[in-house]
Image (spheres, helix red, strand yellow):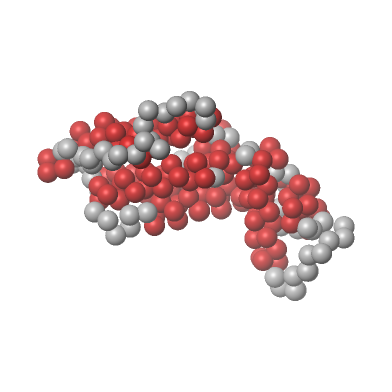
Length: 212
């Protein structure tokens, strides 16, 4: 397979592996779903022969799992950075917004993580990459609730609400939403997490004016 791509030097197999994953990510973004992520399609995007992909990923499923792990790393890094130096409640708001922004900006990656591969095969008690991100999310909620025993419940309810919101906004673009995404996030936090806040924070975050 002829291409204009410059060959990596000997010993740079790890670099080629990352280039393959970059190409797989590009295919995922363009297609919006994992169905288009095939060895041949990714090789074509990377400008290499399919055989070069097989040197790093024995099967399409191996490629998808590697992509799955890397996309979770990207989401984890985005959440970790959001509101890192803010007080606990503001950090929760910032990470909720970052989660929704990832879902809207990266629909293909988001679907891979939470609507296809992650739904059927994820074992939260095992070694799979999403576990660290969920633990970060629960810890973020736990930092603002009064009773740590409620943290997992509150975090799960908030996650479910945010997932529903971003999924509907993405899948029903013609619908006129009465509130913007940020105001929806604030209202959901007030409804699901505020009852568990310490007394001094019982009111929860004030809603923002965001009708966009």
